[in-house]
Image (cartoon, rainbow, N blue to C red; front, side):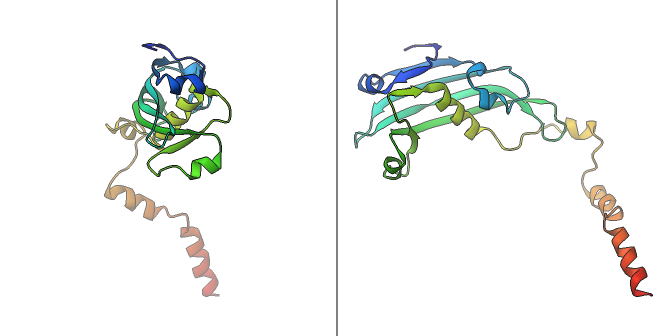
Length: 176
């Protein structure tokens, strides 16, 4: 299949036998869990997946994905455009027992029947490759929020310690 929209499902009996390649774009509307982590629904996910048999006759899904999405900056909570990229190297297995027998370089993907949900697979890979913390690199949100950085920050924190009141209570109790 050449550049087109990604089908909802792939029949695992056929796609591996034909050593098929699926490439194209996937809309964020088909990725509800991933969409919840984003600042808005603007973005593009493109991917290429190759389905083949490995040396030990395991069913392999190899390829990559790229995405341009907007997440929240963890400093100022405004949208921040990021680029995601991930290499996919999965082995399709039926259960946990088969997953434990895989080579360590392969990640398992459990599919109990013949219908492989491609959007779910891509969504999981996107969630895994999304940074835990994202913030503006230029420091624009630091200046915008009047954050104090460097030596001034430690001085202001030390002078406004939340434990200063406890310290004064402790001193007054020991003098009694």
